[in-house]
Image 1 (cartoon, rainbow, N blue to C red):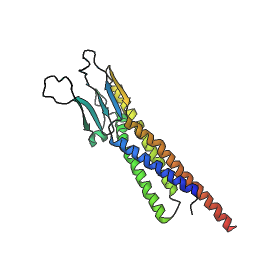
Image 2: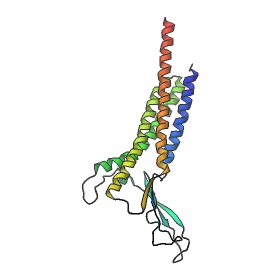
Image 3: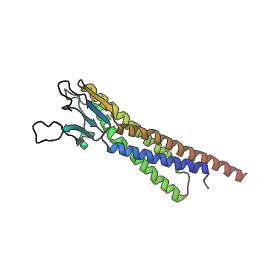
Image 4: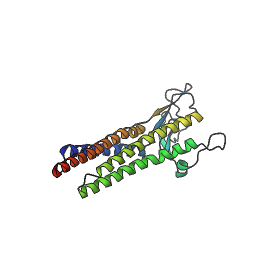
Amino acid sequence: MVDNRYATALVIGSVLSLLATVYLSVAVGTQHWYEYNTQEANNTTNSEPIFPMNGTLALWWRCILVASPSYWFKSPDRKMETRCSSFSLSDQLGTKYKPGNEEEDLLRTYLWRCQFLLPLVSLALVFLSVLVGVCACLCRSFTPTFCVGVLHLLAGLCSLGTVCCFLAGVDLVHQYFPLPAGVEGTLGWSLYLALISFPLQMMAAALFLWAAKSHRKNYTRMTAYRVA
C-alpha cells in the first residue's frame, strides 16, 4: 500500500510533467522563438510603413512579414501577410561554414544539430517515462518510479540545452551578420514556453525521485521491523 504523501507527490509530478510536455510541444511547433522588428523609416508617411525585415526565426523554419499582392499600383492600406519557409533536414544537420571562406564552422554546426535534436530527445524521454510508469502501475511496483524521475531529469536538461543552443546560435549569427540600424531583435513567446518547461520537468523529477527514495527507505525500515 502506498502512503498518501507518495501518492500526492506522484499526482503532482504527473501534472507538472504533462504541463511541461504541452509547453515544449507548443514551443517546438510554433515559429516565435526570435522576432525581428523594423522601426518605421523616416522617409515614409504613417500610412505607408515599410517592413523589410519584420519576421520570426524558429527551430525548424523562418517567417517574414511581406505585403500581400494587390491589383492597385499603390494601395493606401496595404495588408501584410506572413510567409514561412522550413529548414530542410540537410539545413539542420549539414555542415556550416564561416562567411567569406570555405572554413568549417564547427561551433555553429553542432549548435544547429543540438537545437534540432535535443527537443525531440526531451519529448522521447518523457514518452519513455510514461511507458515505464504504466508498466509500474500494471506490475504494482514502486521501484520504477526512480527511473521515471531520472528520465524527467534528463528531459529537463535537454529542454534547457535546446534554449541555450538556440540563443548561442542566434548570437553567433549576429556576430557574423550584425543587425542593420533600426532593426531590433527580441525573444519570442515560443522560446519562453520552452524555457518554462525546464523547471516544470525538474520539479516533476524531484518529486518522483523523492517519492521513490522515501518509499524505499520506509519499506526497508518496515522490513527490518518485521524481521526483528
